Amino acid sequence: MNLEDRIQSFTKLGNFFKQFSTSKIEKIGESENNKLFFDAFKMQIERAYESNGWFTKENVLKAMESWANALTYDNLTKWTSNYTFNAEPKIVALVLAGNIPLVGFHDFLSVLISGHKVIAKLSSNDKYFLPLIAKFLEYNNPSFKNKITFTDKKLTQFDAVIATGSNNTARYFEYYFKNKPNIIRKNRNSIAILTGNETKKELELLGEDIFQYFGLGCRSVSKIYVPNNYNFDLLFNALFKYKNIIEYKKYENNYDYNKAIYLMSQFKFLENGFFMLKEDASYGSPIGSLFYEYYDSLSNLKRKLIVEKEQIQCIVSNLNEVNSVCFGQTQHPNLWDYADDVDTLDFLLKI
Image (cartoon, rainbow, N blue to C red; front, side, top):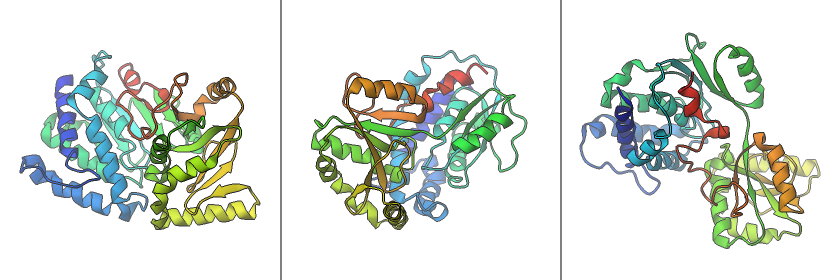
């Protein structure tokens, strides 16, 4: 199986995913793939919240919609065209997170597109979608059948590893996998830099970056930087369209709990009934809240963010002098937008 075969396989997967969107789930045609897999994927989408209460139907569909847009022939070709694919096939272990739907898919894709075999240890919070995807790939290209393994046991017999976890588990990973080529991912958060000149539309799009997946992703904006004397009414007014998020019970429970903590601790904060703003130097805000920090000059802020770049996944801004993503786009990375800014494909092709 050569690179072109692998690209074609994932293009088929992307086309299949296009039937599952936030606007509707619709079977298009009676292809063999639809006969074998459509109902299985639909059932798992409908039931995902039973194993993970944060995996609402809407959020699962958002994830699939994002991957449908990414897995096109043109995108896969553009992504892989910058590399030389002559690496000897190896076995790569994946230790995957489960904070948002399909969060480990990019690593899974990267290993297989590079021609390696994957042995994946799934998170208990997201353990059903990747095996379904594997069956789809194996049916469409039988060469994948000996290249994908899932395990819940101790990882053994592998040549390299990509592991994702918290800062605490990362220390364990670094020790346990110290003798293997590895990528170890720790906690990161995303931020936004506001100037006060943003349009209401831009701030509404920022709401997507804040509230999508309930703020649980590393690409979710958990902190904003604002100029001195920033008018927070601009932000509150724009984000009011997301007020219905409080109707989801798990979010409401977390919001109420964190609000109680803030009140008992006598912290100062602003709130509007469905989310809170708290001035805090930390990056990772609890569910239902958003941290903010003032800046006196953009040049000083940029220097600070360079020093602390290993805590930041991505930056949202409309400032040309900042390497940032557009408002509303944090949860829609390109294939070449690597987590932690570590080139996963380059790593895999050099092990």
